[in-house]
Length: 361
Image (cartoon, rainbow, N blue to C red; front, side, top):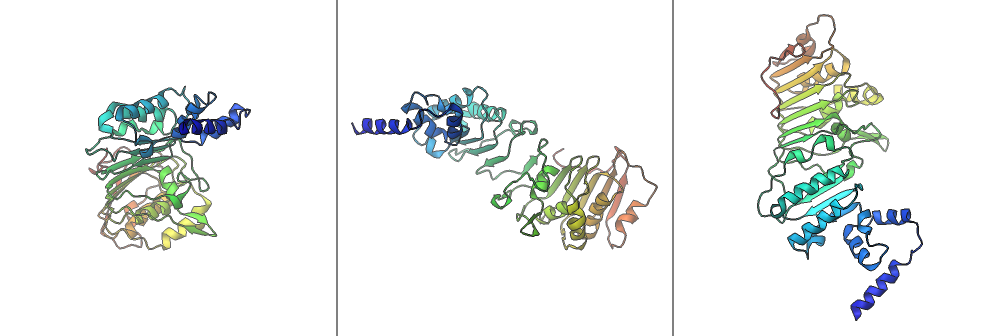
């Protein structure tokens, strides 16, 4: 009887807003987790299908606590498959993926299709290792993707990050709240990122001064940067990032046409900071810059490694396709004013004979 009275009381509360327009109701439902919407659909005919409006699909530990594995899989599948292409904001899964392997892969694939922005995978209930295929999360699907959380994955050795659809600037970054971001890639040894990602970690102007985001990639040995056309990332951004990679040994930088675009930030802050800064790369032995042009920033990038990587053995410069400058002794130009034993190798476009390439290729 008490349960019946409780249901009637909640039902009365749910009918407080019987005449609100559907668009306002949908806006309210947008912020509710799927667990609350499921309860609401039982209490009122009007909200029978309210869960279809939910964009916060949090199938977390609390949601799964009283459900069997088949019951959990049924509800997740129903919520994801019966949406009529409605976009979702967040998907959080807490389960043992080995028991429902095919469903988990289908859920992730469907979430990406629905434009998910935040994907949190918590597979801690599993006692066995679960291999998530990297092809499930492809760059071409990441048009609105902002956050990926993967818990209890200590065997990650390589991460490739590419965000081709994002267009950040000094005022709009890939990481909109850097103070709340913790980069814990402690086990990563090989990292490939686009310039878009690096811009999100770049120093920025706050409270009247330029501030850096603190992080450290302790075990990173190889870094591969893909600088996109007309990117505003600059050599100082690269230097600041590498400063946080204290064991870095090999660096590969691929420059597209018109990379390293000049900016007010570079002219007023970056250039001076790169020249006067004391960023030492103790373990860097090999650097390759592809798409090199005899221009200010690509040259500043090369000279930075000659000057600051004291144990550098080889600097390779592969000229850009449109390289069209008068003959100049590039090795001497790079070493000018610096005492170094590093070799400087120069190759024409598509004629790179050096045998060292990024490990992921």
